[in-house]
Length: 355
Image (cartoon, rainbow, N blue to C red; front, side):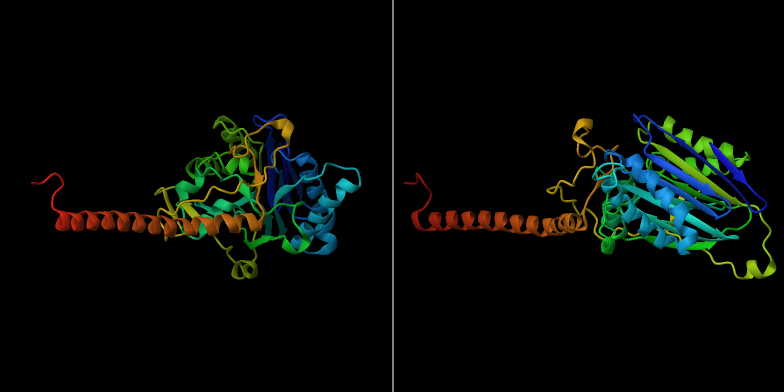
């Protein structure tokens, strides 16, 4: 457990290995820089813990030097790839990341992969959109939110630090103004995959010190049976906003929000193609080393899928209903043709066996 505070904000972070053999997550908090980072070494990749640690180191070094959080993340992508040649880590290592940089109560968010940021202000608001196969289906209304949480490919990501060419790396961004008493949550998918929103909201709303709520979030993931590493960083603004700062406050873009009072979600995409099957003919490249002997589709192991692989899966999924309709039409046409042939034979030759 790490706890830091000054006159402006309180920050704490905690991590747990879960049921893994070692912890591939890393986190970093620096009050002077106003920088907080959570990095999740892609499960099963060799040296995922090296990739997450390198990413934290690069952001700690370069956010101030470059003056741009996204630029620092792009630099981390290059250095994770270059680290292998320098004798650090192993080929194929990668990590997701979510990071926030504060300037007073104003903050900038950036992320790659499926590590997340939530805002707690009495409602739970998701501020990041996963770079994942399932998120692409959800965003386009091809599956429901409930289906997304239990999807057999929910562990398939399409972006990761260390595995992307520089021109193909997508860095998500968001930003806003953290109001007094509100809490910003950074976490690895070891939390978001296994602890539902009602439980997250219940813990965040506790009248307990921030570090106790952070500890309880981590333990909730472990006790829910999650096998993955879990890491959480909480940031609470406790400074006083000037009148000018309050007037200039900007709210972040909210992907969706959960209201614990009603139990309702708001802002989820509508299901526009109900019943659309998910093609399963392309096996994503597994992130697990052979020695781990983890099933390629184990929901406990993060897998990396290229953009081309994901596009192929989606094309096949969209084509399947049309193919099935054609097959049904052909079957009905064949039945109709056989019926017509039988009727014609009866008309010409009479009933078989007749006098």
